[in-house]
Length: 138
Image 1 (cartoon, one colour):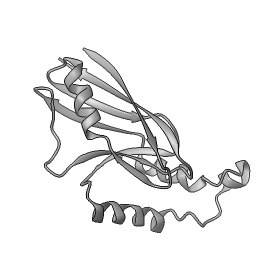
Image 2: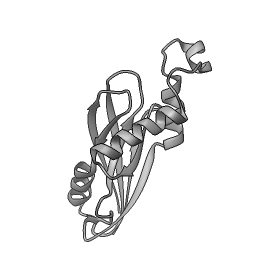
Image 3: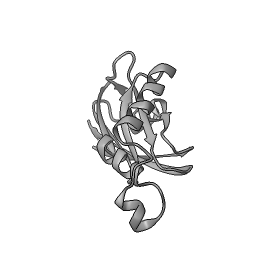
């Protein structure tokens, strides 16, 4: 069986990290599928999905890592072509990736104790984001 659910969120952009674990847990529970996998996918080229321990110190470390790896202040060809100033956002999102797959049994995600599912919005402005949760199993 395949069940597709949608999650809509609003972000602040600029590296905003949202814990969406509860929303994914609810989607899996409501699907009626007992065991399988849930794939979380964000539509858009300036955001990504991953897991993290959602605590203030690590959130700050994660944001600082992106600034070291893909700085905002550099020149990006994308910015020269489009003038929207979010070239770094596209590069960061492509490195993180737009999706994550999590197994589940008994309608319960098999995440680690300190592991949460997060959406990271790298764009340079607030956004409305749409996520697709596709649940496959039996």
